[in-house]
Length: 336
Image (cartoon, rainbow, N blue to C red):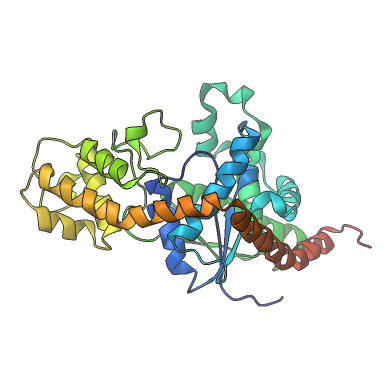
């Protein structure tokens, strides 16, 4: 078996604006990881079309996500950045994995139940087999680690199951058993209006989230309007277990300042939220302001982003081609 150095794969869907949740939960961690691992970062446009997307908006959102990655510090010279649809091997390996995964496994996927809701009979087949494509995304490059949020752990466990079953079915030691990387404070950033709901691009309220396209004034305004409660900040994060909005803001402050939630609680112990929000607004603007401004500059230069994605897709195809060829050989496909 060919030896590979440790490699990570992760992706973001181009559906709506990138949010503070995407930045703190994923992209910022990628910036640190690109120095430690061989890194592949993908705009997962095939995943996006599991629900209908306006074609023109999808193209622009794909560029915007790529610009957000680069503006946040992902370096195309250090890693591979591309959009998924430019590498056909993702869809091809996903079909093979559709034939490896079991219906019972997919029936247990909670995210399909959440997204399909009561209308699951009308949901697309793509939404149902989405986890098989996610497994293909990772294993097409024999990634050894995947940085994931808590809500994606179940999908990663399915990718591990698929890798193990493929290896067992064909009597090979081919696909690695992928390990999760769950890093940093604010692993799951919640809505600024409802601390029990994840910050989401699809929330109808603009004040529920900070978009990476928001200007400095808008960022500060949304922090000031964020929902809290009337009680003072407690000295430990454990004492705020039943205060989701307050706890969420403390976790955001901790993540943006590279501290722990406990550090922030000690600093503001006994204080109300007026001074805390003022400080959090200033911190958020200082961290996110330069990113939003660089994103705008990059998205205005469409040819630059398109060239980065084209170059990245060429590297991704070159990396994945011998792996997919060996999969064909293992499965028994006749090759010319």
